[in-house]
Image (cartoon, rainbow, N blue to C red):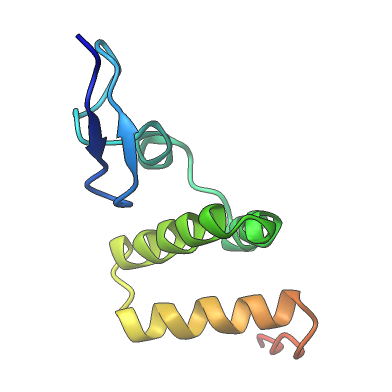
Length: 101
């Protein structure tokens, strides 16, 4: 009997849930790993996102994952959107990073 695709409850991407995998049935392996992995600094995560920018599907998934992480930390949605946009602009060289003092 073939396995049916399941939609991940975190990122919304379809995947095939394999028997015996850790986590919930409706959590894709990438989201499960992201939940259990040691958090990376925001700068490193943004660099990963920019690396995924060549693939539209990977770019969308990475942006959703970053936004979800920020929302899980208690950041308001509008502030998370502004942070992501400004960070991508800084890394792309479109503007300078503000100095923290």
